[in-house]
Image (cartoon, each protein chain N blue to C red):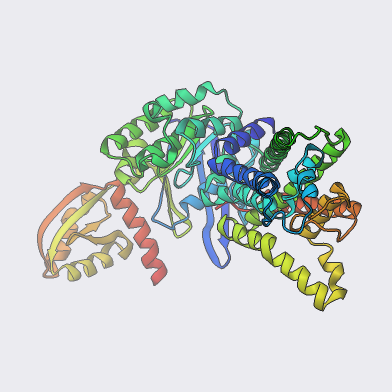
Length: 281
Length: 306
């Protein structure tokens, strides 16, 4: 198992797509969390991130105390979509390139390969979360120093809760992407379907349902994006000023945590059942 | 080849369906330790499906399969089996060496084996280059290198000379002979019948999912046949079919080839002459594996057509 895990890490580490997705997520986080608000703050002109927000709040949202929000605020939607792509690439490419047969004929147990794949994915996502927090910390420190503000940090418990929630949100999307790719034996269709769902369909469905068919809230409250946004909202607390897209108080934090965990378990079980007996042609 | 050596692969009644399509139909075959076994058949005959079953990639619908005394696909069996099934498939963004490093991790073999097998297939000079930049022949050689990572007791190679230039094919033949020279067993699928004739001890021929022959190369190709040029050819064929049976007569290159005891030459000549057929050539010839292959596979097709 450990050997298969090492093999999966080599594959992920050496694949440029991993770094492109990783870099894109961090770039988006820093741009929308710090760069655009900071430009609006120092110029005094409103922009998409500062319009309607009091100037003092704009600054407060960029300081170290608020770094958790900037680090994980984009996870339910934008970073989630990128994580889904990473997950789909991880399993789907093995079918696209035909490499699954090459791997399996080397002798590892099928479930060991699958477990190693998901463990490596989780490792990569953990690195992603840590890097996002580190760069958010660096950016908020720079803002605080530039604006002569105190360096007040969130508590370790708050940071841990934020990182844990962020990892769960990214893992849910990534594993959904991986399972979709496994079921569809490829990359293009699962990525297309998944990304369209994360970025548009789910929000559209929730919007239409809440306005036209409110009785269907029981369905929308079980959707992965809704629960991802609710978990992040619960971690950041009601003090969050202008929540990022997808972050809202739809269900309680506990329920969101349980729902996302259930998604993970269902996906992992589905993947294991599929991989265990499937013909590799 | 030792005909009493214990079997390494034992297949009995192997059947595999894809929906309504019968890919492999009650195949029996035995490969013994230390032999180089040629597995022949036209495209779509069921060769690759059989090899995939032997490596545990797909599950048969019926039949029993034992590989190295175990179930195909079991880790203990795969740890002693090296295989290249169909086209070589690797990670295009990794170098040849990194691809093998990854596979060495999965196989849990020392990393030092990577350089050894790269050297064996003469890829050391390009080991740092990405797999996506390799020619077809280089990809094929990397596939063979991957099959040999574990120093396996059993090597299964599916069309290993695909894409190789003549020098590469010669080197591959040499390598396969070396692989099969000791106790190691090699099962080789190939379209190149001359190559199989040169390399293999025993041959199994599959056609439309069914095994039509399994014999030593000598038994298959060593049989003699009569080559007859006659006019009119159809008339000659009709008389010979009556005399020795339709299955024993075939037409290639405007000549009849008749599987019959060469001692019967005089009698056959008399029958044709008496029937008014002009015989311009009548000689014995040793059949090649190619002759046998086409005879067996086309006989099956024409038999099915009837």
